[in-house]
Length: 256
Image (tube, rainbow, N blue to C red; front, side):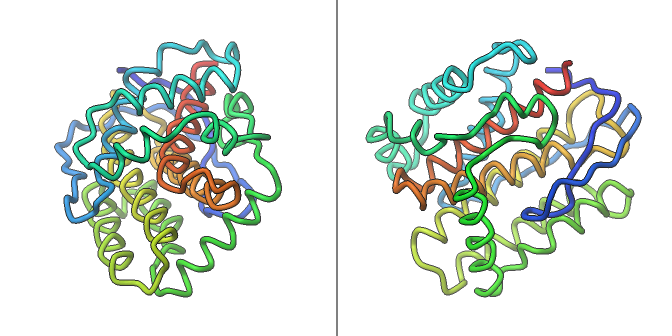
């Protein structure tokens, strides 16, 4: 897959209003990255996220898709994906219309303008509350934006960013969180690691936008997890669908 865009924007905060910085296209050197962390029980979701982008990225023309079609395609991809984790497989086997309901009121089509995915206010509030619980538990979730800015400015390597996410994995597993919140956070961090590797290895990416797609993925996972809490549809699968859906929205926006 080749990712080509000439300008765009990124948000340096998971919960603050979107702020944009334009960039110009540049070539990035090829690097070898290992985003896997088998200590995270949801590590496979991050790889499934990357594989879904490869499989579905060409399916929807920019601006010419329906949100329901995109969600159905993402869920179908996950349900046929060869997960080894029995817990994830069991959750997916039980997933159906309630997962689609998890994203009621969302507009991934709005994502053709990067990061402007629309979602209900209840999900936005729930996401902020979820991030607050993570921070209160001692997980350095609030540092993600700053680390990505450092990555953009050449002060942080992709390897360093992935290592940071692996450190957050450990913090998440040790933090005093309920099972649901921990599962959502570990799913989000799995997506963060793998999407960093995915976008860093693309042929072309804007100089000031290297972290942009990755942060979009993380925000999609966080909002999806929160939506899973609000609707009761399932934190892990909603986080996975939210991350992939928002990633596709970003990519479709880049192709306009």
